[in-house]
Image (cartoon, rainbow, N blue to C red; front, side):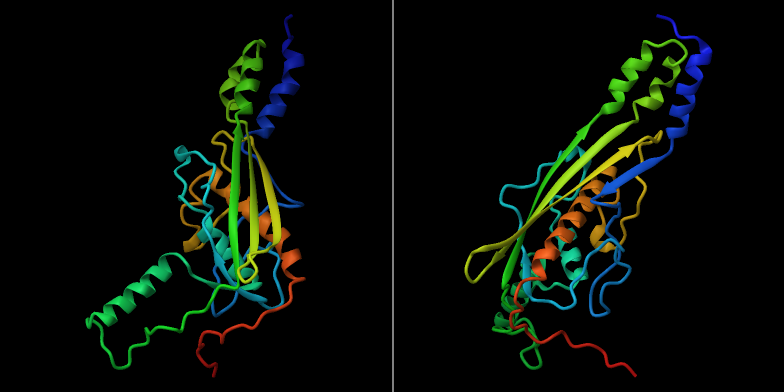
Length: 264
């Protein structure tokens, strides 16, 4: 069956209009992770981030023992834990303690002091001052990508007047990611809350580039690819779902806050 040029024009126009545009869906809206967290509070955090009025406990992020299901070809960081840690601190729901590289550095400093390498007088690194993690948060991730563009390209290849658009059509991709966050009470070992988050991104651009910006040092490595941005968005959605549960937890006794510079 042959298609006349006049009939093909509306289809061509529709495909050309789609080129260069992206649509992002995160829960009821789209967003990415950005900004920083610290003594100044959540700085330039995503407007989509749901927050707590006050922290309820101290929290440690735990690596998923089963790893994370995304391909090494995406060249993403090996763990999303630093990304989730930023979300947890920006939300203000928990005081976050480090059980990763920061803890190893603290232990190393104590070892150097005991070995007599560091000064003894006035040394601020001493035993028995660490804060316990009252809760642990474990992330889980499933990422999938369906190359819908090749299927569309195969259809266009068989249609006269449209076969020249096969190259553009092959950039159409459907990316999905689903993240889960599991919250455990370290005193009782009970899983007190769980949440999932998902995001779907449809790319129609020549380069398939997802619109969005992932800022901050913690986000380094997650902003270099569409896959990284999709994963970050899924964790943001999962975190927002978790906050609804965390707000119902009874606050536990918290350690003193870190010393801040006095305002003049």
